[in-house]
Length: 200
Image 1 (spheres, rainbow, N blue to C red):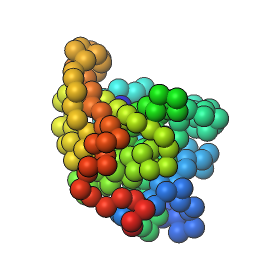
Image 2 (cartoon, rainbow, N blue to C red):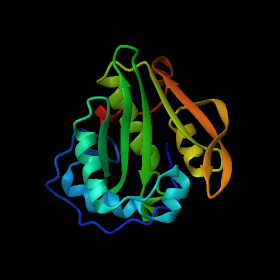
Image 3 (cartoon, one colour):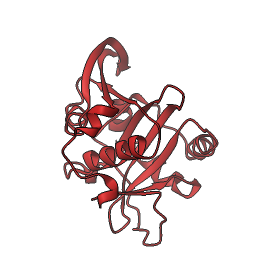
Image 4 (spheres, helix red, strand yellow):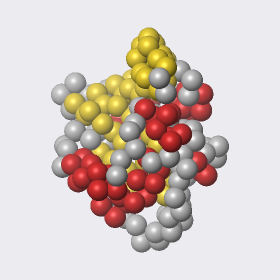
């Protein structure tokens, strides 16, 4: 699920030497590793994050185990979103990759203090360029509950098309919520009038 709201992030020192897996105009993507466990744990432990994304806060040990398991999963790629000075502002992932069908799902989590600056859109644009420019993807999807206005705006700005609503598909704080389903196809990405990540 994608989200762009209410994450109380922990402060993290800029990492000038952090190796980037993918570079874009305003952000870079660095592969998540075990040293990022405390940072991700801090973001995921915030109750607003749990509400917006629909996750259970995990222990630090469970977060480390999750990173280790995800790093061994060939069907997903997880990245920290870094500013040019290597300050981490969020986490983004390309999950459920099916190279035969050319499909995958985009997931995003931004730290609270870095919301509202366009970093979410920049991160999604960068990941989309990676998926369509370097991987044989044909269709990307993203989902968020219908009350998550900032996430809906990020997806729209990045060219995703809302293709439907899964009614009463998620539970938050004892109430059922609808889930908005978005997609972006390769030919739609080609028609987007914006610089590509490799033009940075």
